[in-house]
Length: 244
Image (tube, rainbow, N blue to C red; front, side):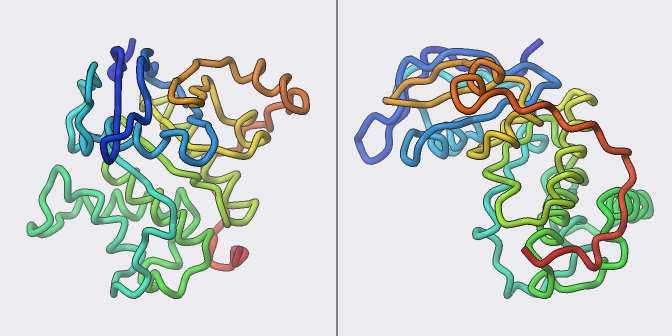
């Protein structure tokens, strides 16, 4: 089944067509890698899926409620000067459905603790975001997404500038979310990461989109990279993770 489909979609920015005649469906419980050169239209398509950009023609058919759609941008978009702790960031994942001005209840705090334990950041609960390494911040951002209980998740290069251990942890979190039925779209540039993670690939080029099998794409590059073995669903604490 598919809760997200594209129907002859045409998108433009500043009066210039970026993508056209884009069709296809993103399968529930699958991870789709969105790839393409800079300027190919990846961010434009994500904006349309999130409802932030209206199509010129065609349509995005998405039956996932807005409060269950999550967008995790690159870390550069995060304001590290904002006085927020790891726990506060993760708890903010309740805002789309619960509201930003309401207080939290016991089940919220229990779920937050479970999420931090799963991500290996329990000891960082009260650490300000500006004091975290890149890997620790990305784990916290993933925690917010888990708190939101997203049914549709879009990520922009989520493994950029983080340590290898964090990449392994976050990949397993994404696979767990997919197994639970979440539709996941992830912008990737690294072919090894694509080989380990992607169930499907949407390649944007020349204003058009083409669906590609991951193995066919990898064979076209430097050969198929074997999938890494799946990790257990509990992880070591990241309080001393690398600072990459």
